[in-house]
Length: 175
Image (cartoon, rainbow, N blue to C red):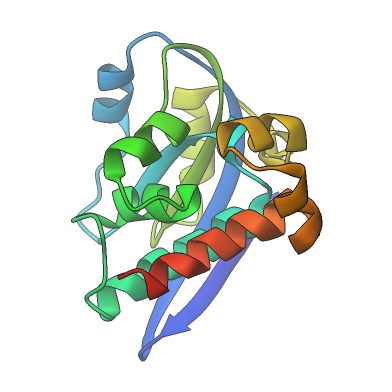
């Protein structure tokens, strides 16, 4: 399944694609260098899927990342890194990378592609391995531990996914 989300932001249109992969990363730097390069503004961000609370969580964060640049409220200098920061709900880039960064070994990867070719996920499958969008589903116990979420917090908002989306939104008020 290749769901493409189109959003409009200040008369601009953005094409967002999100997918999950089960990967074996042996050399992260090599992987980054092998990602498709594009002159048309394509942004590809890889994140550890263990820190993802579902497709809505990532979509919400990606939209906030895109809008942060138009408001000149971005935390990072690149859209890819801004997506990571917003997804983590952190203001510190180093903390966001600690939570959502890719590591060597067997890893579940969340890929966000903005304004890339419609077949980008098929291209990335050659680098990342088996596509499996199920890795994007929230594993609440892991997420609670990773994001230091208490039972009270989770119960107040309803779900961990909603809480993480709320944290992303709150980054706007902290700018």
